[in-house]
Amino acid sequence: MSSVSRTSCRDRFRRLTRWALIALTAATIIAYFALIQGQYDAIGIADKIAEVVLIVLLVMEGRRDRQTPHVPGT
Picture 1 (cartoon, rainbow, N blue to C red):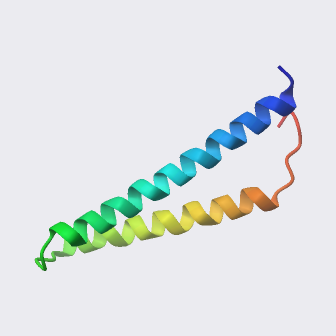
Picture 2 (cartoon, helix red, strand yellow):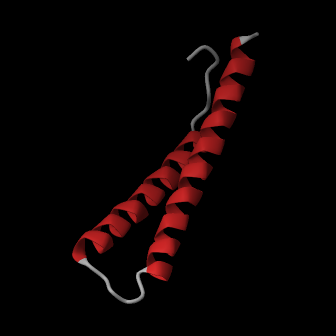
């Protein structure tokens, strides 16, 4: 298997993993607000803020990866 196909396979896996993490994190945020029934607490809100930051960072990483040219063998 050539390094180009390994790189493209790895990139595809990374992209799918990134989107899976974004979807899972978004689902936990939605579920939290759907199930909490107006009884918010500081820890829960802080956790959701951290999850939003995680989504933002994953999206930024995805954009960076699309803009960065890939060199085979790296």
